[in-house]
Structures are given as structure tokens and as C-alpha cells.
Image (tube, rainbow, N blue to C red; front, side, top):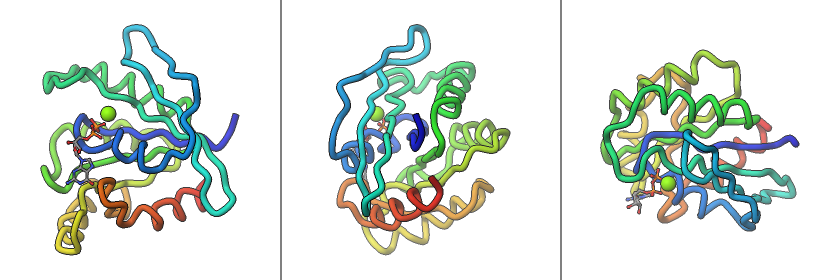
Length: 163
Ligand code: GDP
Ligand code: MG
């Protein structure tokens, strides 16, 4: 297996919305990892003739803000183990949180290629807010809107370039 992209990030940043927007074909496999997370959804994406698998890492604990650090680490490590490229999603509506910084700290320790995705850039004004995520030290934030699709073409170009 190669060309696997995993979507990670704290709850409610729009990981599943992004997954649903990018996926053309949902694979039958949804895999439950006991004690770690709910189901992980797998899909296939075809972009300019390049095909890759994408994993929505689901969610940590549904609807709960009370998430254990250990659980975050397991989730992110699982994604890192499995994927060739990580999409680290953050949310310009809420701005940067300690939880984002914590996930960034985990990702930083690995050499896995990563793209920082600033989601909910629904209008041009919000590009400035996306730029604020430079402070995470994870490279250039790709401002996108998973709801209206803006920026997702550029993101996919970058994904296939890095795979
Ligand atoms: P997840 O927990 O990271 O999988 O987040 P979801 O995909 O479930 O989305 C959480 C909430 O954010 C939902 O209410 C979505 O409709 C909303 N959302 C997702 N993407 C966008 C976006 O690009 N713009 C806006 N305004 N809302 C979004
Ligand atoms: Mg989700």
C-alpha cells in the first residue's frame, strides 16, 4: 500500500467535511481500532490522473471537549504509521487552540510529510486569519473551505506533488 493520506486534527475543525468533499469513492472498509477511536473511514481520490487513498481519522470522542492527551497521541501516531502524507486540519473560525499546538508538537517529532490546512476560509477576508497559523511552525497554511470547495484544488495539487 502506498499513497495514503490521513486527515488529522482536533474535533470540529471539519475533517469529515473535507473527507466527504475530496472522496469520489468510499471504500467498503471502515476499520474500528478497539480502545483507540471510532471507525476510520477510507476513501479513494482521483486528482489529475493521480489516485490515492484518504483516511478520515474520525473523531476522538464524539462531542466531547474532554480529550485525553494519550488518546490524541495514539490517534496521531496511528495516522502517522499508516499514511505517507498527513493533512493537519485547523479551523480559522475558532483560531489557534492549545489542542492544535499539542497535535503540532506530536507531528513535529516525525519526519512524515505534512500539509497544514486552515479550514473554514469561506471568504477572501479569512485568508488573513489562515496566515495566523504560520505561528504553529508547521509551514504554510493552505486556506480552504471544505463547505464551498475554495482552495481545495490548490490543496490537491500540493498533495499529489508531495506523494
Ligand atoms: P470534524 O469533527 O473535524 O470531522 O468536523 P466536521 O466535518 O464534522 O465539521 C464540524 C463542523 O464544522 C460542522 O458543523 C461543519 O458543517 C462545519 N464545517 C466544516 N467545514 C467547514 C467550512 O469550510 N466552513 C464552515 N463555515 N464550516 C465548516
Ligand atoms: Mg469527523
